[in-house]
Amino acid sequence: MNSTTCVIEANPDVSGTGIRASIYALCLGGTLVSYFLRVFSPGEDEEEFSRGVSSALGMQGLALLCTAIYQTFRNELTLFHAICVVHLLALLGLNLISKGRYAGFGPWRLWFFALIQVISLGAFIAFNVYLWVTAPHFGSQPACNPDTVYVVFGVSIHATSPVFRYIILGTLGASAAGFILVFTCMLPCICGAWIRRRRDSQGNGGLARKRGCTKWFIQTSTSADHQSNHQREELAGQVLLNFTLNRAAYIGLCIYLIVSLEQTIQRNTLDPQEKGWTFGQVIAIFLLLGVANELLNVVLASWDRRIGHEAGSQELAQVRPASSSAASRNSLC
Image (cartoon, rainbow, N blue to C red):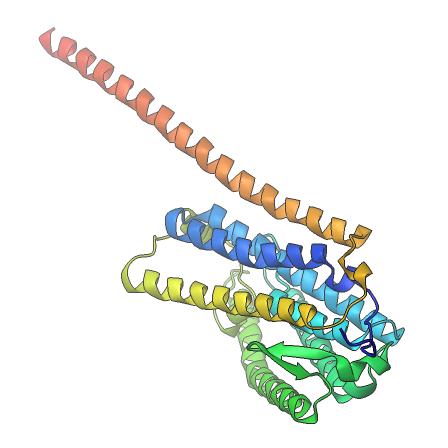
């Protein structure tokens, strides 16, 4: 190791082993379990578990983004750790959905959901833009920024490279423009659907039609929805193949992001305390118990239903011979 190489200060609560292990397990494990439940045990339990995993990922992503922005304002975040945050946010996403399904749908839920999504996505893009624009002097250790590397497809690239930064900024600009364009086009559709729904509710005695573009944002829950969840069709043929390819592509992307982040960590000179376990990392690991508890409840509920069905079938089998023998005696009489 070169003695003149700058050593990046430790910040294990941002990119420590426990934080990364928790996020990796939630992304890969949650996706695999959701896939197997959807293929082999479709129904309400599978959908509830998938929503729980998505909600946990989104909340962790929001918490990580808020922590990074707070530390950036206090000038406590290094360029290396900011890059780790961006990488982890690519894994987590910012899909802030509710864990449960709640009856009723109206403008308050719609606008609140849209506002939260817009704010979180805008904060993520703004943080990225600020990071890469100020990369040469970003953070609490600007002297280490020229030595900070970012691994892309196995290639180490200096994070302060102008060409690399311009490519990322151009991608972010295109993403922001696309988001604004889509939202601008969707806004009239959402307003029109809401106005139509209000007219339908006034004309049909309060029974609104659950149609229109609002379903693109929030899935409403009705008794018919719950019945369809219990009778959810099993995937087969081309539908199963498309679903499998979709999940495989997502898992492949997660694996690439994980490998790239681990290579980035290995190829930078970090303080040895970065590998230490802190209170925040232990909490992150224990938060996985919530998802494990959900999975355990799914498995136990499936076993209980199976035992109940078997017991019901046995009782029905015992009742039928008794009823047939009684009917035969009555016919003889």
